[in-house]
Length: 408
Image (cartoon, rainbow, N blue to C red):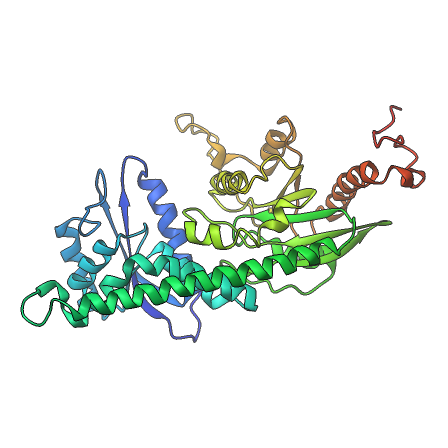
C-alpha cells in the first residue's frame, strides 16, 4: 500500500487485461507497477478493472460490459483519468474517451509524463520532448474533435483536414529540429567522454527504483538525487571514485522498466552511450522485489538492444535488509517449494555457482557486506586496468606484463 501525504493526488482508475500471454499473476504484477507509476506521476488509484480476453478489443481495448462498469465508476466517483496498462491505438483512445468522458492515457503516455516531470537538464528535456512528439504524431486526429470532422456534411469537409495537416507539419518540423539538437549535444558529449582520459569506466545499470543512485552516493561519497519513486534519475551522472589506490569513473544511468516505450529507448539511446562505452557493468537488482528475476530479464533485453549484453558484468543484489522469503510450514508436504520460498543463502548458492555470473549481495542503504562489495569491484577494475596499462604492473606484482594473473 502506498503512503498517503498532504499532496492532492489526481483520482485515477487502472484498466488491464488477462490474456494467453499475460496470466492473472503477471497481470497483477503489471498493475502493481502501473499503480506505482501513477503514484509517481501524482495520481491516486481508486480502483482496478481487469478483464479476461483472448486479445484486446480493437475498438475499446476491453469489452462493452466491462467498459460500462468502468464508466459508471468513473462517473460516480468523479475520476479524472483512466490509465490503461497497454499502449492504445489512436482509434481506441478516441473511442474510450467518448464513453468514459474523462482523460484516457496508456502506460506509454504515463511513462512519458513522468519523464517530463523528472527531466532537469536541457538535454533530458530535449530527449523527452522528442519522445512525446513521436508518440503524439499519429494521435493528432483525435485532438481536433472540436471541429467534429467525423460528421462530414456541408462546411465540414475542408477546415478540419487542413488544420490537422498543418499541425502534423508543425510536429514533424519540431521532431526534425529536436533530432538535430540531440545530434549536436551528442557530439559535445562524445568530446567530453573522450576528454576523460583512459580511466576505467564503470556503469550502474538496472531496473528503475532498485537503488542505483543510493549505491552511487555511498560509493562515490556524492549527493546524487535518490528517491523511492520510479525514474528518480534521468540524466547520466559521472563521478570519479577511488578504491584503495585505484581511480575509476562511475556513471549512474536511467532505470529500465518492462514495456518501456520504444520512443524512449530511441531518444535515450544517446544517454545509454555511457553504458555502451563502459568497461564494466554493475547490474543492480532489488532482491526484495518479488519479480526481481523478471526485472533482470527486462534489463538484459534492453542491454542486448543497445549491444552491451556481452560486457563484463557484476550482479549486485541490493536491499538484502528488506528481503523476506515466504515461509513454508514444516508440516506442509503438499505445497511445492518455489523460488519465492528461497532464503537469502539459497539465492547466494544459486547465483554463486552459476557459470559466468559473478554476484554480490549487499544493502547500499545500511552498508551491509560493503567491504566485500568494494573488494570485488576493486578486483574487477584492477583486472581491466592492468590489461590497459601493463607498464603499471609494478603496482600489482601478482600480474604479468600481459595483464594475466600469475599462477601461485
